[in-house]
Image (cartoon, rainbow, N blue to C red; front, side, top):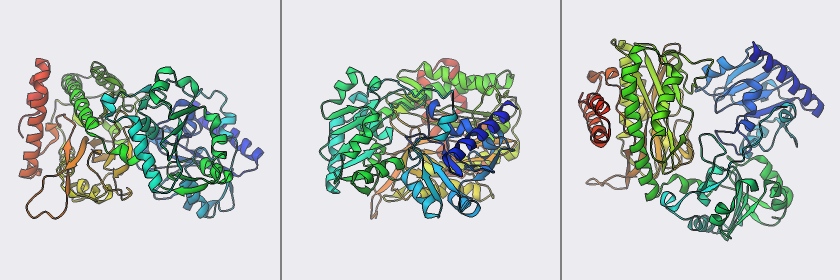
Length: 593
């Protein structure tokens, strides 16, 4: 009841503020001014107004209704967290906001905060005939009386032994691309690009090691870095060097105002609309194009690749210890979703170079496993019962790499139901098919998404999320520009990229299945008669599958051989470093099918 009262009261206060400003509605995205997936508490505007804590969504507050658009990953979660008397829930791909609003509120004057919406999104809404009103002050901030202060964690250098390339050469390469395009500068609004380009990390977000800030990279290789001075101590200033000018964020308007006559690139998909408007007002020539750091950041250099392998090896030791512990504890009862996640985190904390979880662990037992991005809280924390499915999706941030792994487990001691076994095995078949794929250079993520879905499609089944996403190098667990999804942009997959392989199946109210490994893209050996270069995947993740949920009869001989070879590798690489009880369990878990 408390949540419902707060949602109603907050909506009423916001509507009063909108009326005072003379607008009919207001757009509230999930992101903050950095437009990232993860935001600090001070940027959780969507959660504050709606109660919805998912990592993707858009709210539209009108005088007579409040709408929450989100995707299939969050349908169940949004229904549970929002007050149905206040909010109407809509699927963001089936009913896109611009289409819905042009039909249901065609004459509304819709206010928006130009710091919180990418330029491309604003242009889509305007193209639909909607009347958009940029607001100088966010009206939600005006009523959020106890809003937390923005984070001020210090920035720190990322040592060359882990970065693999010095910042000066990164700046020089990106600047050369600007000169080739006839551009004077590019606005870098993605803190991941700023972090990678300058070889710095930070602690402004709980799970992603970022120092939040903006940068302006010029064609001569120099950079203006806009970051709170309190974050930039002498060690990191010395690391940045004389070619990087450190300025407070308040200096951004004056800096952009001085760019009259210059050609400035912005990436419209990830740059707040405020930047485009400010540059136009300054008399700069806008050039749209991709952030020139994004693709080089996704192509891991040899040092980053070695670091990722090492991080995954250490992470696998923690996973083995957790899986052994779970196999003993789960059948006995007494554990909960939160206690299991805490135990896995404890195993990871014992590892060298571990810094944090790479995202809040998704620990879902039984029906909660069917909520794709479920997060157990004190209110939802559920006991883990014997003889049910349990899904654990987690990862670690290490100084030399980022991990992300999902396993679906059977708690035992009884025999799992036949439908669960069949569906788990079909998910595994898709997972194997993608991991073993050879494909020509130039292929994008959208082209191979169906490979992982085909075994499910054959049974009339599917899953409502992408099959894979990119992974950063001690950066974000979700990294572009490549993803494996039907909705993915046709960006070619390239050697050095790290992508996840995570098909699933979800039966609401019953269980969820997901199996996830991380894959490193590498050149494939040539075969006789080959006419163009091919790529393949190297599996980085090392953790056994749940053999009690595998039906070997549903696997082809090649698939059984793949699982046996993978398990043999897991045992060979980990067994000698584990305590005797864990090593003995791992030997059973990795036995041939």
